[in-house]
Structures are given as C-alpha cells and as structure tokens.
Length: 124
Image 1 (cartoon, one colour):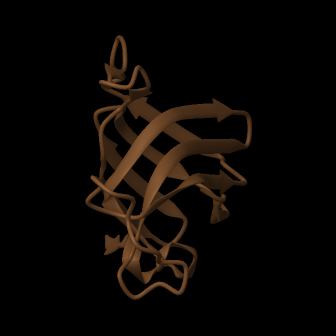
Image 2 (cartoon, helix red, strand yellow; image 1 turned 30 degrees about the vertical axis):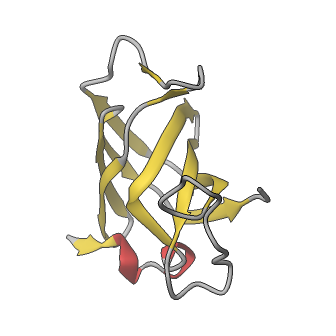
C-alpha cells in the first residue's frame, strides 16, 4: 500500500494530525468530515491562531463510486472535547493501492473500494 501523500488531492494536508468529526457512509459514497491540518508547504497555510499548534481548515474527504466498504471497530460514542465539540481522534493512517483505500482511526478501520477521492477544504 502507498501513503496518502502520493494522492494529489491530499498533498496539502497532514492527516495524522487532523481530527475526524464524523464519518458518513451511504450507497456509492463515503464522507469523512475533518478538521484538516494544513501542510507546511501548502499555499493555503496561514499562521495558527494563538494557542493552537497547527493551522487547520474544515474539510470533507470524499470517496465516490464506492463498490465495497468494510468498517470495523466503530466506537460506541465520540470523544468529548473541552469546548463541547465531539471528535473521533486523528486519522492515523490512510493508504491506498489503486482503487483500494485503507483508513485507521478511533472511528474504526475502514477498507473501501472507490473510483475516486477528493478533499474539499472550507474556510476558517
């Protein structure tokens, strides 16, 4: 399996430091809602806010054309952050081989076969 950094849509982020807010699976699609940490060499990088270690943007990691999906180890409930928001930890691993993608996080282990992957970053 190859690291996610070899995927063009993911070159601007550091997934191991990014937080998963939710995961939504539906027929033909998988969405991973993130607080995506922006990589140091990205043109989107700005100074982190006071008290924050990284600059991050909200993002949606989208797998389209999903034909197979296996999701194991789903948690019973998310983590509760001090500010009241919830998360499922960092996206510890994302690797791929062709159209097969493998994700590991506190949200579980997800193996997905998809025709494409995109990352849509929002504004802060």
